[in-house]
Length: 113
Length: 114
Image (tube, rainbow over all chains, first blue to last red):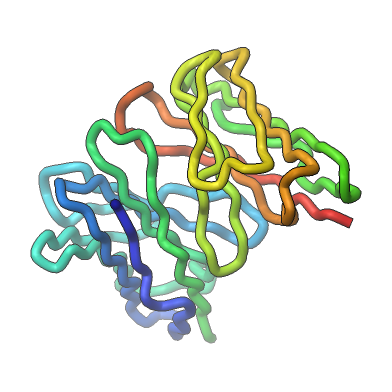
């Protein structure tokens, strides 16, 4: 069965510092991978996705993620965090021909001044 | 503008009552989904539908029911059989039936049982 692990429940980063949020997945075939962001009381917004091709994918708001098959990881990065990036971030995995997505439990990002 | 709307934003229910959450999309998407979100548990799939008049149970379907009479609408009923319905409910849609595609989310409905 597919599963997603986001090992960090909370992360605090200083404004202007770099960010890396971890995501590890478990799936036998090539996964389809997603990162979503959620502001409090809001729905989820897609940041970026990986289906195939270049393993470094660029997303909105200056985010990027790298698919590493050998490590079963799809970590999200941003070189310089802004206070508006404070939110909860979810990693999700799907598979070709499989309609459902499996979500991680999320990482809450706090940005300190 | 194309998107997904959910109503109401907040909903209060007395114990023993059924309530229906609305989800409408004008993206012409085939597939629609309902998720439940509880703190620290991520999103859990309740039901999904790939085409009109067809839907499948997700991981936590007990105490919930859905219908898909129109392509653009996928209402969720929380029945009195759902033992702990207080949660944030998210509706999503994706483009193509039977394929893995990006899911787009509505703004959510927060249900509170009094």
